[in-house]
Image (tube, rainbow over all chains, first blue to last red):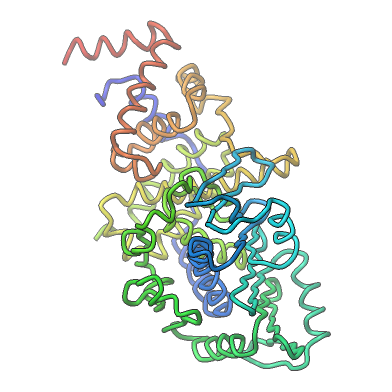
Length: 303
Length: 167
C-alpha cells in the first residue's frame, strides 16, 4: 500500500503511541529460565501431556475402526466424540460462548444420544479442560487410564486427600509422589511446587512405567514413551516420541506425515472453528490442537 | 541471525499498540505482548530463522490476547465473550474517526487492517498471524478500503484519490 495512504499515516501514529515500559531483557530471561526449570520439575506432567496428545488420535481411531461403541472426549469447552451416525466423521461446533463446543465423530456402531450422556457423566473416555485443569480418561479394552492436572484452589485440597489415602510415598526428583494401590488399579499423585496437583490412575504396570519414566528422566530428556504402540499404529515420523520430537522446539504436527489422517478420518471436523478455551487454540489443523494441549499444560502448571 | 534485543526493543511498542487497537484493553495488550516475546526469546534459535518471525509473534500474541480477554470478560460480566472488544476510542485524536470506522469492520478484517498498517506486517505475515491464505488477506484489505471509503466518505476517498493522482 502507498505511503501517503490515510491508513498508512494513521497506522504509523498509532504504532508510536505511548506504551508501558517493556520488561527488561533480564526479566524476560529470568522468566524463560523459570519456565524451563519448572518444566523439568513437572516431567510427570509432560508425560501427561503426551498421553493427552495420544488420546486424540487414539479416540479417533477407536471411533473410526469401530473398536468401541462410544468414544467421548468432552468438557465444558472440549470435544465430544460419539458414534451415533452410520459412517464417517461429522462435526458439530456450537459457537455460542457459554455452551459446550462439541465435535461428534461417528462410526458404524449405533449408539443412542442417551448413552452419550451416560458416558460423559460416567465411565468412558473423557477429556475435560478449562483454564486451570484438565482431566483425561481413556478406556482401552478392560483397562482404564486417567490423568488429572489441577491448579488453583482445588489443588491443595486434592493433594491433602491424596496424601491421606496413600499407601506409600516415594521421592522422585525431590518430589513426593503418593501411591494408592487398591489392587485393581494404582493412583500416583503429586503436588508440584505447592500449586499444581497431578494425578495418574491406571493399571499398575502402566503407572509403574510412567513413574520409572519420570524418575529416569526427571532431569533429562524423555527419550521414548509409547505404551500403546501408537508409533507403529499411526506410522509416526521417526523421533515422534523423543524429547526432540513431540516436546522439542522444532516439533510441529503435520497431518501429511500421518497416513491415518489422510484417509478421510478427519473429514467433517471443522477444526477451523474449534476453540479450545484455556489452551489458546484457534487452529486450522490438528497440529495446533497438539500445540494447544502441550502449551495448555504449561499454562495449567505455570499460571 | 536477527539480534533478539534489537528486535524486541523495536517491535514491543508496535505490538502493544496493535493489540490495544484490536482488544480495546491496553493492559491485555501489554501482557499478551510480553508473553509473546517471552516465548519468542525461549525459542529464539528457531524463531529468528523463520521467514516471517513477525507473523509468528503476532499469532502467539493474538492467541494469548484472546485468552486474556476471555478472562477479563468473565471477571467483568460473569459471561464468557469470544469476540474482540470493539475499539471505542481512537489511540490518537487526529485519527479518531478513522479508527472508529475500523472498529466497525468485521473481526478478521479489522485484524488484517491493524496488522497491516499498525504492525506493519506484510501480507504473507498477516496470513500467518491470522491463519488464513495470503489471497484472503488481500481480499480483506481491499474490502476494508471499500467499506472505509463508504463509511468515511470524501475525507477518506479524497486522500486516496489525491495519492493515486500522483502515482
